[in-house]
Amino acid sequence: MRVSTNTMYDQGVQSMLKQQEALFKLQQQISVGKRIVTPSDDPVAAARAHEVSQAASINSQYAENRDKAKASLGLVESNLQGVSTIIQNARSIAVAAGNPILSESDRRVMAVELRGRLEELIGLANSADSEGNFLFSGYQAKVQPFVKNAGDVQYAGDQGQRLTQVTSSRQIAVSDTGSNIFERVMDGNGIFTTSANASNTGTGIIGVGSVTDPTNLTGDDYEINFHVTQDPLTLKDIITYDVLNTTTSSTISTGNTFVDGNMIAFDGLQFDIKGKPADGDQFKVEPSSQQSIFKTIDNLINVLETTTNDQSGKTNLTNSLNTAMQNLDQGLDNVLSIRASVGVKLQEIDALQSIGEDNALQYDQTLSRLQDLDYAKALSDFTRQQGLLEAAQQSFIRISGLSLFNKL
Image (cartoon, rainbow, N blue to C red):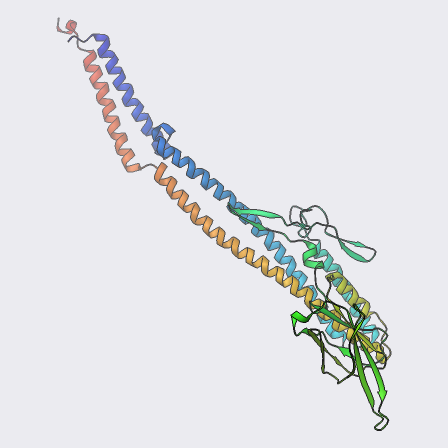
C-alpha cells in the first residue's frame, strides 16, 4: 500500500495535536487543582459534584439563618433578663413598704423610685435590634409595641411570631408578642383572686388561697360577709361569716364561726383570713383575669401613695401589698417561662448548628473525592505526556525528512 506524503503529514500533525491537547488538559488540572475542569472530563462525577455543591450551598444558607436566629434570641433573652430584674426590684419595694416603721413620706419616695422602674420596663418592652426592628411587636417589626395613652400602657403590635428557617424542615420563632409577655398575666394565684373591701374597718388580712379540688371549681364570684356580736355572758366578741355566691345570687353557708388563721373552704378552693374582721367587713373571691405587668406596678405605685393614718388604712395597705406581690410573682413566673422557652430554642439551634457543621464537612469530603486532583499522579502523567509529545515531534521531523531527493 502506498502512503502519500500528505497523509504522512496529516497523521504527524494529528498525533502532535493530540499529545498537545492531553498535555494542555493536564496543565489545566494542575493549575486549578481539580480533576474535573469541564463536565466532559467525567460527566457522572460532574453531575454528582453539582448536586453536592447545591446541597452544601443550602446547608451554608441554613447555617447563616441559624446564626441570625441565635443573635435575635440572644437579644430577646438579654431584654427579658432585664425585665425579670425590674419585676424582682418592684417586689422588693413592695416587701419593704410593708414595714410598719415606715412613714407615708417614705412610701412616697418608694413610689417615685417605682415610677422610674416602670419607665425602664416600658423601655425594655420597646427594645429594637440593630436594624431597628422591635423585638416584641409581632409581625409589625417597625411599629412600636407599647405606647402610653391617658396613663395606660397599650399594646400596638399584633399576635404574630417572626419565624426563621433553620433547616429544611424546621422553623424557629425568633420573637414573641409583647402581649404574651407583658399583658397576658393571670392575677391572683392564677385561678382566683382574693381581696378585701376598701371600706373594711377591721384588721382582717386575707391570704392568696389555693385550689383543693379543681373539679369543684365554678368560676363564680363570691363574697364573705362578717358579723360581730357580743356574748352576753362572757362579753367577748363572737365573729361569724356568711359565704355568698354573687354570680348565682345564692348562699353557700351562713353563721360560720371565724377562727383567726383557719382555712375557709368551699367549692374546691380555700384561703385564710388573719386578724380580727369587724362587723360588716367584706372580702371577695373572684376568678383570675389577665392584668398587664404595667398595670400591676402602676397599682402598686397608687397603693404607696395612699394615705394610711388609721388602723383600717394600714390593714388595707397590707392587703393591697399582698395582692401586688402575688401579681408581681405571676408576672415574673410568666417572664421566666418565656425565658425558658428561649433557652430551649437556643439549645436547639446549637444542636442544629453542630449537625450542620458535620454535614458541611461531609459535603467537602465528597466534593474532594469527586473533584480534587491527585497531584503525584498528575505530575507523573504530565512528565510522561511531555515525553510523548517530544517523541511525536521527533517522529514527525524524521518522517517529513524521508524523500528520494535526499538519496540523490
